[in-house]
Length: 302
Ligand code: NDP
Image (cartoon, rainbow, N blue to C red; front, top):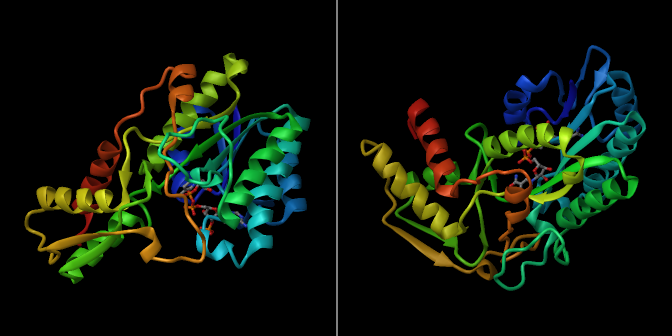
């Protein structure tokens, strides 16, 4: 099997390089040109040419415009990366008979209520990022190519910056922190997303009825305040030698912390469909976060 991975150095892309390796030959690209292949997904013509030259059996798109606040002032670029590029991938996948794997977001929903959203529930994005990601989903579906779309949320990875690392840095510098407690979701590891992706690619090879849209997040739920408190308590357990200055973590509402892009208050996603169709168990979010903390705390001092 030949797999073309786009966005290889993002949080999910990096983990996909590992998880896809046993499936076949992986051609992994970032936005640079390598050996005459260009992975810059903002150049739609070159993107189509790259896919035609590689002739993959599977295209996995981990590239996106993920800077949620910046997208508010970069609407054209967000649309190109999050909707137009995935459409090009879908059209090329269709003409090659390839499978397209793509990622989307909890931000396609409006965040009202407290129920976990199912795949078929009404969407209502609040931001440019959410709107362009939804348009990406819709454009892929409209081509009728074979596809898997995974909506995920609150992605973290040991590599690069993340919310947990920011909280740990602030906990070293300050005695008091204020963290939002009325946005709910599930912190989800890029490693889990990548592993489920590899499993799903194998699964749909012999179960074509299971192609389509899925919610893919870790089990359980948290708000950012609970997430931050967990990170700090766990760090004190793993590295009691590390002095954290923080004594108080105050809970504040999202309204007290305005940002250019509005974010949904309720980002809970139901993963029932994924677990049932693909015979998967999704671990509690704390499990992956603890593992990431073990990894980052064992390799560096704070
Ligand atoms: P990252 O921001 O870590 O990675 C995105 C990647 O896209 C980066 O490697 C970036 O490259 C690449 N990229 C940006 N522009 C281009 C371009 N013109 N050509 C090629 N590559 C480009 O995102 P994640 O790994 O976290 O996200 C993966 C998917 O999951 C995305 O579809 C995202 O929308 C979705 N998602 C993410 C969430 C999160 O919390 N992060 C939450 C919900 C969904 P470079 O580093 O060079 O800029």
